[in-house]
Every structure is written in structure tokens, then in C-alpha cells.
Image (cartoon, rainbow over all chains, first blue to last red; front, side, top):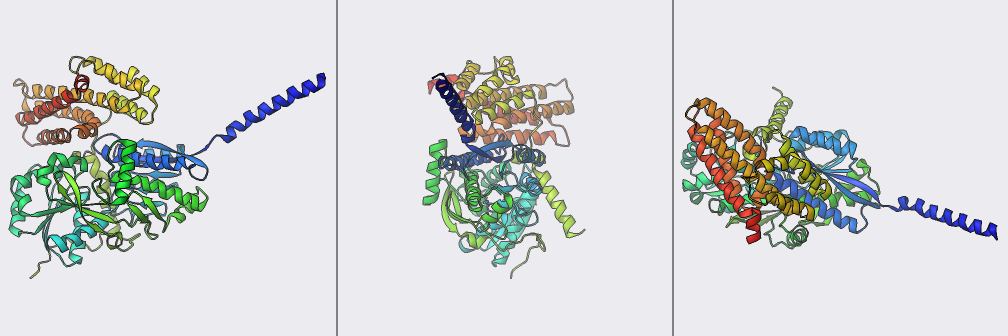
Length: 406
Length: 206
């Protein structure tokens, strides 16, 4: 009897130990992904929304069991909107946190710097905000993907619309450093290719406080349209001055998506009235896919989404590719992402072009009305993406020279 | 120069651009212990590590400065931030921190204005000290620009434009301290509006 009792106790102890031993094995496996960008400061409007978009995607995926049996965990890092901290944080995310996907950064300078890190450490890298023309050309590498239309795509889309609907004679006024030069030359190339006429070009130095000296030259050329390539408070100051000179009424105006943040529009609604801007997402667009996404976003975050919330798609593409490849191996995931199409992105069905890993995104043109971006036309991604130029210089042969038309 | 060299130079310009450019909000002065403490609290809140956020607030440089500035901030601000942190209300905590930094920036703007008006100091010295204070203003305002713009986009734009205007006079070849004063008083006036609309008593009354 004593022996039987002893065996019973022993069995019970072994059973408990087995259960206890099983517990750690049953806890969910974790895969980490990195969220890198401007989390504090003037660009927080992008960095914060990138985090919110990624979180939304992760919550949806985790509710369905995660990816490849792993729960997904996001590690967010602030890059201070500068290349050097961006590189440091990217290395930390990859080498210390072992992230399998890195989304970021916000400024093109930081994103290009991070591309060197993701290339070196073979990490899947998605860019959902930056739009410099070099990322899918000279800086491209096999682990890099983008679902933000770059300046070439945006210029192609805008040029066609301006020529068809706004006017054939355009004056390009740009801020004379990397961003403005890039937007200006892409637009000039696209517009002239379509047969439009650039009647004048001028670059205002950084930190220009008074744009008045340039207005005389603009008026002299009498364009149909002013294409403006500025950003941030420069845009606000320029529009205020153009308005006070009566030029916002005299000319039609257009620019690409970084001309002004949506959050700044209400503060400058009157000068911006009628301004045509190109974007891939707006909370005010009645497009069913955008509205469905925005409602979901708003339920979760109590605020409308913006373009940076497109980081939602980056996570979905990566997760779908991991499932397809049945592996987190970056080479297999990169191969699986090439050519992949998804129906459930923030703007509906989208596909990744194999050659340069750019998502072929439909975009919309918006006209500013009372401080809001109102959609006026849809532009097919296939018409704007342009030929793949991996490894090629995107500005080769470019000239600011004005070609006079008779 | 080869095409590769030209391209490398262009990339270098593209990289260096944001760091040199206030106008797109990319330039940020080096953190001090107050701004660093704010970032730690903010990131802890975002990561939903409320205990950590509370500890960082209670033990950090930000709260010490808040107490030093007790007469310049709305009454009950420290208590309202603590209550929000205890309740896990990140939005309310962020609003309270925004009010604190707005008050800090307003104080700096008024101090700069006072120093710039001092007739006993040489104009170049006044402009130089005004420039240093502007640096401190941007260090703190940049932290809460997004929070301000979400509540009052016109105020956020007005502060950024006024800051840039004042900054342009620091770089002017001839020192003109008098020209720096109007944008600084504008910053103080706009932020007074933000503080009054967002202070704990205003939120209770709304």
C-alpha cells in the first residue's frame, strides 16, 4: 500500500513537472519588426502615423495567429530626422533587436542612409514616406521595397493632368536645394516629354524670406500654371506672399505631395484655395478602399489617417511574403515579395513591380477647397511609374535650359 | 568631374540638406536633460509602459524644471500630468506636457525680448544672446509642435513662421536687435493662447 501511495505521489510530481515544463514551450514565439522615423518634432505627423499604420496591421495579423506561428512585436525608434542617428538606430534594430523587417525612415536623407545598413545586413526594408528619386535607381538593393510614389512618379502624374486640364505653359519655381531641384527637374522632364512648354525656371535659395524679387520674372513670362517645389514653412510663406500679390488668383498652381502637410492646410486655407496637389491617400477621398481603411484607422486611433499610414501595407506585404516563403529568410522573403499583389491595402489592390520593387500605386489629384484636399482625378500607377532604372542615373542628360517654342 | 562624382555630391547634398534646414523642421538642437527626459517619458507612454513613464516623470529633470517654473505655468499642471500618467491617459499626459513646454518657450521668448531691448548692451551682443535663446526655444518647441498643430494648426504655423523670421535676423550682416523683437513677442502671444485653451482649468471648464 505504501509503495502504491509513493508511486502515486511520484507520478503526480512527474505530471506537474511535465506540465510546468510544457508551459514555456507553449508561450507564443515572437518575431520583431522595426519602425524607424521621426517620432518627435515637426515631422512627427509622418513618423507617428507610420507607427499607427504598422500597429493596426500587426494587431490584425496577431488576431489571426500572427505570421508563420509567431506573434509580431513592433520596436519603434526615433531617428531625429537625421541620417546619422537613423543609421545608429537601424543597426540597433537589426543587430540587437533582430528585427526581420525594417520600415522607415521619413526624410529621404535618412532613408538613403538606412538603405546602406539594410543592404549590408540583408534586412527587408520598406519605405512608405520618403520620395527621393535615387532610392529605386542608384541606391536600389534587393531587400529594399517602396509603397511611396517617388518624385518621378508624382511628376509624371501631375504633368499629364496639368497639360490636359490646366494649361500648356508652365513656370517652375523651386527651392534651390536637393528636394526642390529633384521635384523641379522631374517635372520639367515629364512635362516637356509630353509636349508641354516650360516658359521659365527659377530657384530661390534656402531661407528666402522675401520671394517678391522673383515675382516680376514670373509675371513677365505669363504662364498658365505655376509649378511650385517647396516644403514646410517655405511653402506657407511663399503662398502667403503670392496671395498678397494677387498671383494665386491670376495663375493656376500645382505641386507634389510634400508641398504642404495636410495638418498645415487649415492654417493657410485661403491662399491655398484651388491649389492642385498629388497624393496617394486622403481621408476625404470617397474611394471605398480609402474610406474603409480610414474608418478602421479612426476606430482604432480616433483620428483620420494620412499618407504615412501606408506603412500598414508594408507590414501586410512582408507578412504575406513570409507565409508564401514559409521562412523569415530575407532572400526568400524578398523573392516572394517581387511581383506580389494584395487586395487589402489602404488604397485597395496593389502590386509590387519586380524590377525595382516599387508598388504600382494609383494616385489621385486633389484640389484644396476650404483647407481640405478634395479629389478631382484618378491617375493609374501604370501610367506614372516609368521604366525601371535600377543602377541608372535618374538625372543623366538633364538640363534646366528653357526650350523656346514658336 | 565624372558622372559618379556628380551623383555622389548630389547625394551628399541631399543628406546634408535636412540637417541644415530649419525651414522644414529637420534641424534640432542637441538634447539637454529636460528634452531628453521628455522623450523618455513620451516613448514610455507610446510603449504603454506606464510605470516607467511615471517614474521618469517623478524622478526626472522635466518635473524639477516644472517646479522651478511654478509661477509661469497654469496652476494644477503638475497634478494633472501626474493624474493622467496614473490613469494611463497618454493623450491627456501629452497635452499637459505640451502646456509645460509652451510655457517654457513663452518665458524664453519674453526673456529674449527683454535682453534685445537692453540699451546698455552692444547690438551685436544682444543679437548673439538672442540667437542662443532662439536655439533653446526651438529645442523645446520642436518637441511639442505636432501636439500644438493637432489642437491649433494656425498657432503652430504662426510660431514656426515667427521663429524663422527671428532667426533670419540673427544671420543678418548688420546686427538689428530691434527687428528680432516683434516675432518673439508674437511667439509669446500665440503660445499664451495655446496655454489658456489647453490648461487644466480650461479643460475642466470646457
